[in-house]
Length: 230
View 1 (cartoon, rainbow, N blue to C red):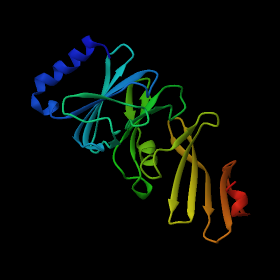
View 2: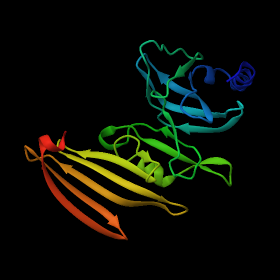
View 3: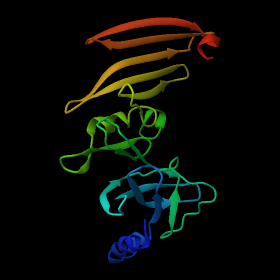
View 4: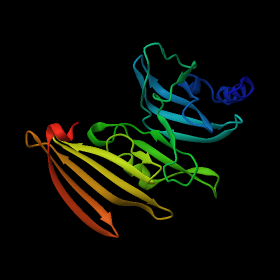
C-alpha cells in the first residue's frame, strides 16, 4: 500500500477518534495475487491476538474493496513481532487469519476469515465469503461457513477434481475424511466419506463410502498398521 493511500486510510481513523487507534493494526500482503488486507483487532499480547476484529480489503490499485467484521479474530504472532496499538505490523501468509482461495471453483478468488475456535476439537473455524460477479462483492456463504466451522481447521481445495476436502477426528482412534463437490446455485453435495479406525492394535480398518451415480457404495478393508502408515 503506497503512502498516499495509507494516509487516506488513516485519515478515516482520525475522524473516529481514539477508539481505532487503541486497536492493534496488521497488514497482509502475500496471501493473494489480487488483494491486500489491513486488519484491526481489539486484544493482543506477545503471543497473539483475539477478539472483535475488522478486515479491510484493498485491490492491486490500493482501492478499498470491502470491509468485514468478526467477533473473534484469532492469530498467532512471532517472537519478534511486538504489538503496539496504532503501529502497523506485517503478517506472513502462514500467520494470517485471512485465507484466499477459489472455494467454489468458479475462477475467482474467495476468502475465509477466522471466526474463533469452533471447529472439531476446538480447532480454527472460519466465515467464508465467495465473490459474486453480479454484485461485484464478496458474499457470505452459509454452506461453506458451516463446513469451515464443523471439521478440523479450514477445509482443503482440490482444483483438479474440483472438490472440497474436510478432516475430523473422534477420540484417539478414529480419523475422518469427507469430500464435497460444489453445485452452482444449489450448494454442497457430499460425495465421499472415509473413516480410518485404529482402535484394534496392529491394524487399521478403512471404511470408504462413495457416492457413484447417485448411489452410495461402501467398501471396508483392513490393513496392517505398519503397511498402512508407510
